[in-house]
Amino acid sequence: MKIGLGTSESASPSVSGVDVAMSLRTGLALEAEPSPAPGALARLRRRKILVLPFSILLVFVAVGVFAPYLAPLSPTETDLGLKLMPPAWVEGGALHRVLGTDQLGRDILSRIVHGARLALTTSLAAIDLSGFLGTILGMLAG
Image (cartoon, rainbow, N blue to C red):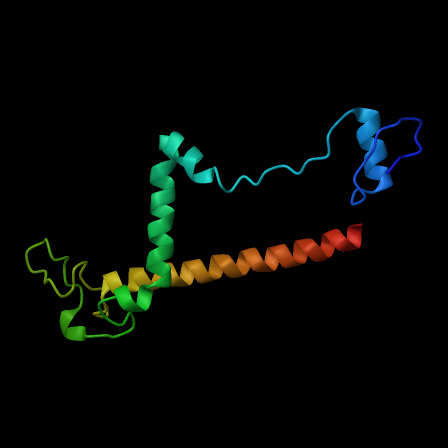
């Protein structure tokens, strides 16, 4: 189809006249930019310094998601007979309480694992809320 802009360039019928006019004036081709996702893993491998932080983040998210299956005991279960038990590698520690217990006899490892889940849930809720409010304010601002 011919575009009446003083040129004899042709365009496909799926492209609008305004886009074609802008393309013909600037000499730029109308092409979609490729998604950055396919090369993200390759870029991560090239930048060795990013591997450790992303690995730590991945472990944190995995522990938060699978907390009920990874925690050896309930984080709220108390046993005053085991209060302030040291970690397993210290004399007086026990293998069934790897990181020891607190002043109420609660297992510290279980509390850390479930704390990761709570931190993950809280941060995702904050991200969702701020994204929602930012979208609403952006639409109101124009």
